[in-house]
Length: 354
Image (tube, rainbow, N blue to C red; front, top):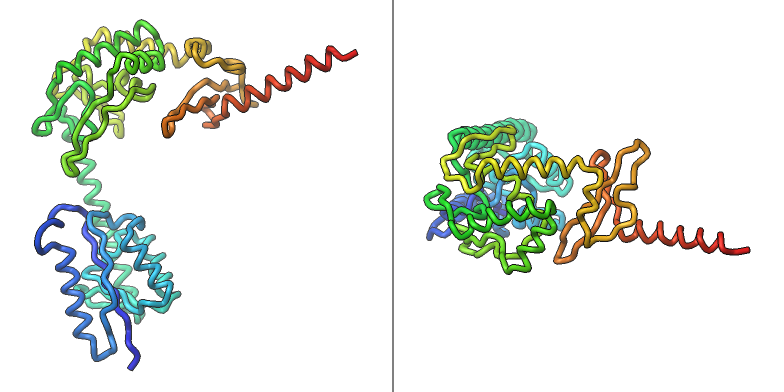
């Protein structure tokens, strides 16, 4: 009787409990091994276990899963055994793609707690039905989480994420960090003076200030503490958290927060009005005085929509662009300016020729 190599796949959506002496992944593996042993009379033989701990079943970007698929394609595996069908995937589209891959490679799929396999039509029908319910359960769970976040924000509660400059997090509540709060007020005042986020960032870096330092709760790794960029300054200047508000951007709503404000309302309103005016100012590019450009304020698309000057920071390097907010097109400043200048020089030389 030919031997049938059986691979076990285990998965857990969160890292909670994985550090226990006997965790969920080990429980799944032992149950699957016992099932394979019970099928020894059919030639079944344990081959290898593939695991993904702390990864959602809604994505295919899993190291263990990709290694399993590669070994299936190589012909090393004839049966994949899981504890439950949703351990392999919670997405019906992804699962359908994997089943096509399994069929192509002559590999069957078995769920030991749901008593079916894909070697027959009834097993395939049952599989699709169970997977539909698994995806439904995942989407309902996601809706519950979104509803909980919306309800909590409506009550003015901070729902986590990167701690904002000016506040510390104590028992999931925001408390004012007076030293950082003074820096936040300085950023607002400096923007009033310069009307330029780049200039504010440059000033902060020259004075030796740095971004918020914080330690991740799970990994205990320290984050932040770097230099300021325009993007950091912009997030601070437009974050209603600093006037005691909680924003729910998904629903485009702002609620009164439970935390204390840092910025007075009149200063906030002044800064927001200045930002709006700068956005609508066609000559706003003139404020970027240390970036000399040729076409800023003069470049338009075929529909008459203007390109504005902008920049981005990647791997410590600054890149300058002309950006059209309607089409979403970015044009590199240096290459385009050099092209225009070369054309102008050629034109001048031609005019000088007799």
